[in-house]
Amino acid sequence: MATTAASYTTTPNDLTPEAIESYRQRGFVRVSGVISPEEVERFRQAAQGLAERKESLSKSGTFTQLVNAWQEDEDMKALTLHANVAGIAEKLAGVPLRLWHDQILIKQPHNNRPTNYHQDQPYWPHANSEHSISAWIALVDVPVERGCMTFIPGSHSRTELQAQNLEDSRSLMTICPKLEWDERVTVPLKAGDCTFHHSRCAHMATPNDTDQPRIAHVVILMDATTTYTGERHVVTDPLGLQPGQVMEHEMFPRVV
Image 1: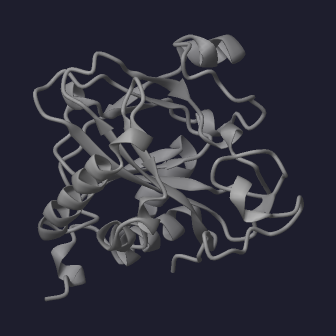
Image 2: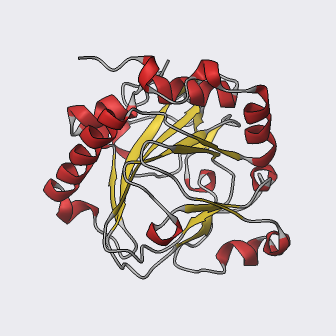
């Protein structure tokens, strides 16, 4: 039986003007129940199963990561292109969006490593994308001890920063010392909840100190008018895009 909008705690129509304004001013917002409890279990199983099948391709020191999961599994495709997630993202961003890529992120129990502070967008070969946004969907409960996210409010206004070194815990603060003294907000999530954050909003994730894996799925969306800069990236390298070309491609579908 298809899941109906009534199964979701939050839909695009439920977003308050205050929540939208908070996102645009602070660069992130927590949104509860973007997928239903039944979907949480379905997508958790799919994410774990795909990560296990692709284990040799996806492990790093900090977490298990699998990019473009939607191309590998029909259930993950359903989550990546989920209409409720996309609809909320477009309402927050205020512009038409298309998929950039997705990624399963699993922190194994007692991994003993945080994800260091960084902005996302400096790593991407994008121009003309001022509103790109990530939906970080919790597929299990993610308290602070399991590896939830911490954000630096307002840091999405720092549009001039170079890509940070994720292996260096001090990289972002060295590049932009003023951020050292800014507020930091840690956001634990229940399964099915989501944080939406702007691609320039600096963030980190705590280590997983628990006995259970932290399982999240991230859907990254970019402005529909984004153009390709020509810089190398694992997602775009095989596609033959030309610098300056609008990123209209079957790998980057419109999402609403």
